[in-house]
Amino acid sequence: MAQMERCKFSTKRLSFYIDGQLSNKARLIVEKHLSICKYCQNEAILLYNARLALKSFPSIKIPSTLDKNFTNRLYEHKI
Image 1: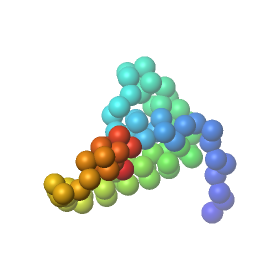
Image 2: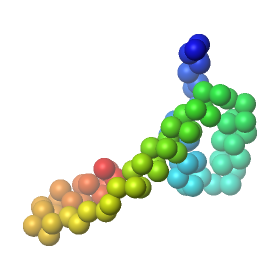
Image 3: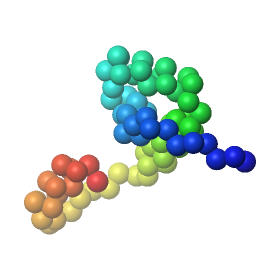
């Protein structure tokens, strides 16, 4: 199978699209781009599947003994 040429469209923007975090205008821009770009279509599918896989993991409770600064930094960086 021939490898597709990498697109310069933002993967971050695709990620925000998959997560439903774009304005209507930005969403329409991404959807228009996805309608013509096979590379980004594949990237969007990969991002969507990764999101589903991550959501399938159970939530965990952070022990109350964990250092508060460390916990705050985790949430700031959304690790």
